[in-house]
Image (cartoon, rainbow, N blue to C red; front, side):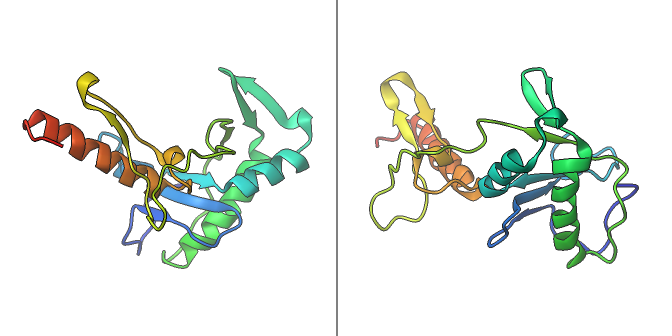
Length: 170
């Protein structure tokens, strides 16, 4: 975007109930990336990605470094329209972007999660192996795939590793 969005009091947003967007984040808010550029990363829902796969003309796909890159006038534009609508509810104004780019990341969504959650739990755990000082985490371990679940799983893993470093017993 040509400049910072004014009026926003957030740098990331988990979106619930959207058919298109699962997560938005302001790139400049990430450590080491604050170069005054206003760049937003928009993660689609798996349903949107599947819909785009069905609708897009295969001629609009290009392979770059093993990733299928969609033409900006197709998937990126549709995601931007949904993102601009969401951001426009909080920002004073949302200008037209200077550039758009979409990447199709085949591993972003999984079809069959491991469902390691205990019945009634609402977040994903982590799998840890103390003898090897190994921790595995991510939203794929539980029953839901959202960035919040991945973050919670990462926090569980980090807490376990920190307890090992402190010499605490599990």
